[in-house]
Image (cartoon, rainbow, N blue to C red; front, top):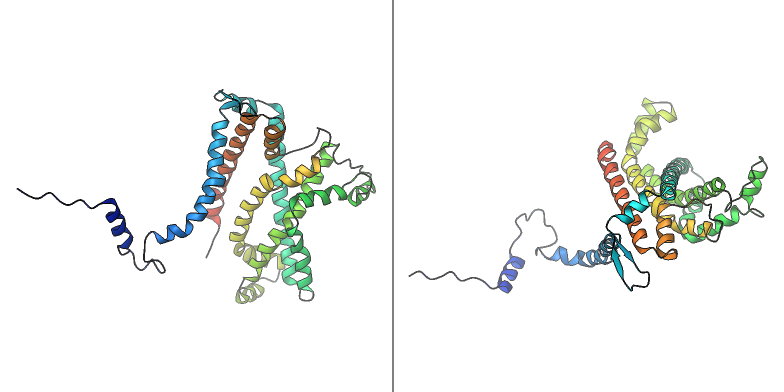
Amino acid sequence: MTASPVVPSPLLRLRQWWTRPSAHPAKVAQFDRPLAPWLFVAPQLLIVAIFFYWPSVQAVTSSFYLEDPFGFGAAFVGLDNYREALSSTEYRNIAGFTALFAATVTALSLGLGLLLAVKADAVMRGSGAYKTALISVYAIAPPVVGLIGMMMFDMHIGPFTKAAALFGWEMRVGIDYRDTAVALITVAVWKQIPYNFIFFLSGLQAVPSSVREAALIDAHSGWRRFRDVTLPLLAPTGFFLLVINITYALFDTFGIIDVMVKDKPANNPITLVYKVYLDGFKGNDIGGSSAQSVILMVVVAALTVAQFRLIERRVHYG
């Protein structure tokens, strides 16, 4: 009769797993316990789970229900909230403006940020004050930026409105759809330029002097040196900023839009994230706003995957 093998207790197995040596000791430079890295990242994972994954699950769940805004009940409606949003002419118009707004803000913010970074990199005297004046704008909160934008585009005292009047353009921000769209894009671009400027300037200053000297010998044209040498070296920075700027245009401009179009006539351009807020918090349509947020989340996820699939593979990190 053979003795049955002794099965270790769960506590003993956990202790053996904790104290066992690493299978790849050369790859583990600082941790000799496999659970130690997870303990360090656990607080961050907990924050992400509580403030991102749990609300996302709640939004997906609510999108299938018609909920009472005071929490007294909910009725399952399936995909009706999605059908109503996608079949709405107003929703499609807002989606079109959101795409135009995001593309314009991203292109102008990246282009102007890169231009200012190139000019700042070439400045010898007064470069500190020049850089500080540009970077300081980024410290302003979005609602404050929106308030400044309202003052700049005010129909009575706004300097931008008066400047446009010199060319025969009567700007009526808050009343005219196109004028309000121009004001929103201008203010959003002004807020984001310093962020791009910081990263582009850091990337330019990281270009080795030997590479600059070799480019100066091979190409006498400044534009050719920038196109063939400097711009490819800035590709990783540019790709990172592309993703960040699209996210900024879609989500982080909420405070600017809220300040500039709040309490104004209804014929004003807004983005999809602001419509989610209007329908959910002011219209008390919890299910409809949840469905809109899920649609926006899927679109942003697909756009991000497409960027990494189509653009990131063209970026050289060497």
